[in-house]
Image (tube, rainbow, N blue to C red; front, side, top):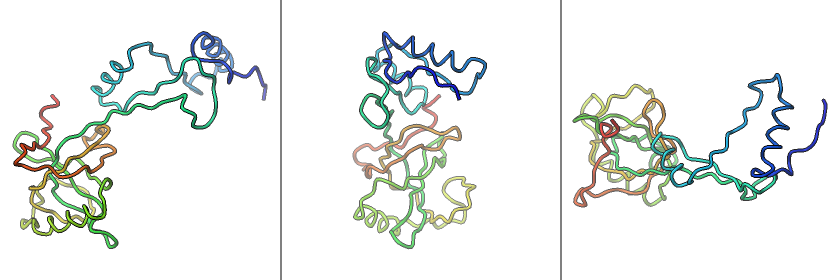
Length: 201
């Protein structure tokens, strides 16, 4: 293996071009082996807003004058898009060691409810216990689940009454919440609204 000059000490601004040329020369004829990210010189707030509108998870930034250093040192920052909406709790997955393992969530599409994924983090032990007590009083009595559901997981369905405040990063391609986290229950008397998938169009 041929070793050339190190690019670790080169920064991203004045010396960034030299570093890019070194890498491009080293990769000549090996297209696709490594992809170099393009630098976007823009207002980071506007860039983040645009990334969030596109449904991306966020942006990555770096101190332009810093050299490359391995490990976590603060030169690189990942700024995530965080969204928060209300979703109906329509069921839960039972657990032998806790009140439940995850909650199943739904949103409106027109006047119908649609399954949008589950959430299994963000609860304190007390919240999980209180939620289970509430859900035990809302058992779904019909044979057909309250939302169309094709997964084979063991689910206890409940009447869509409780509205959960859910923080999430983005949507998957099949319209499921990504990196969802439970933040609490919303109260209907506080004009709590359930997310509408129609509003995305």
